[in-house]
Image (cartoon, rainbow, N blue to C red; front, side, top):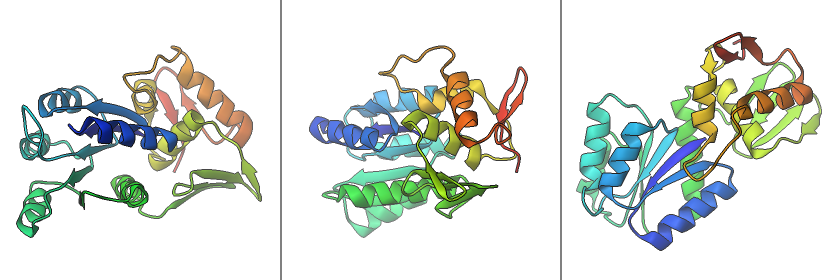
Length: 218
């Protein structure tokens, strides 16, 4: 999953990125509102963690611009502003959740996972594909009765395809999903990950649409 963190407290921003990357998310970071606006309009994200009190452009206007553009990316507001009317304002502007500083990282991760599940249209934490089971909360995969060891990127590709099962997912969509601005991936990284998933989970699970991308049939 690819996330954007818009947070001007640099120590907190770096701690968030480190924690999220340890959970195998691909993370882009913006340290002010203007940079956040550029990144959220230039790239596609699975979710955005957004502070409200930002230099150059505040989080309220970023959220409003995002929703006025028709973007449905889940947004988790992360802020020290805890007045009820401010929480209401954020939710009414289109935020999906609101977490007040200081906060527990475990709660942030749980709220983020819940947002991602709801956004996929499948709020259950477990996805079943034939004899393959994906526990999205624990980020574990099993086949039959046995656990299957996947790399972080293999898991990200599998969960993306599983959450969008029945729909074609193009190579550029997968690339954007697993790649952040600090990484350089091989041009054939997507094909390599899909090939490895087929070896581990069965060759019939992921179907290739030649010249288009991949699909897991619903």
